Image (cartoon, rainbow, N blue to C red; front, side, top):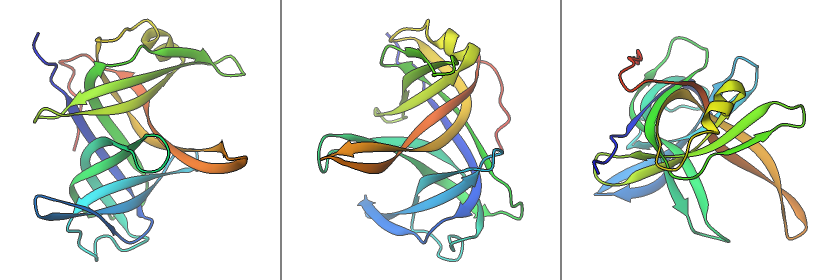
Length: 207
């Protein structure tokens, strides 16, 4: 069976929340972690973790507005207790932005690797949780948690493991509390909020 071709593109515009911190080295290249604060129309912010090679300190000055194009990446952090799925954005290009308003758009295409979980909020709104495997060009895949709402949730709830999906959405952060050793600890989860399902040949302007 032919492997499904992955698609992974994201554009972001927001404010650098802190100075770059060295993350790791790969093939002799130093990579740094930079938090980017991206405002939503609702007035809240998503704080997303960018990974960039050899960052320009001037570009990534805290508080500066930056436009970014890249890919959503995932890996399992097995340090500490259990295994935690970490979601970041690998920066392919970045530049200063004169426009001081948030932008957060992505297109993903991949394969469902877990049966969708449909549920309802306490107010009766339909939700569906998905896990999408998006193939990279060199044999690995990124496993990205997605959430759909309303009529999209109803449609996604009828899908199954192995089904292919192409979607448009946004990467968002969500704070929650977890009880650890009797204490409430604040954590941050990252997920894809699904806005539209796309046909394989549907063109999406991405600039």
